[in-house]
Length: 99
Image 1: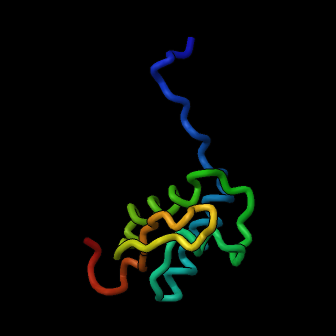
Image 2 (image 1 turned 90 degrees about the horizontal axis):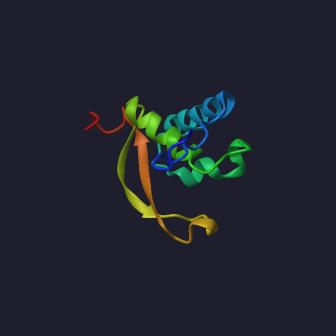
């Protein structure tokens, strides 16, 4: 019997989606410029089949692995986000130690 108090967990990204998102983040890090999740959502990387939360989970994973670090916020340029706030990231090795 399933308890009503336990919210269903969202499905985890498929292995290939996680790998593709990790590779996209690595490309953005290698470019050496600040970036947001909007850049991963762009058609540039051709990652289809993304579910809500896949990109955020990839950024959190990269942050916990100390591959990227946050440097600020800006308004999203994606129309679906309606100018909501998104975090700006850089590669962790850029600009000193990770906080």
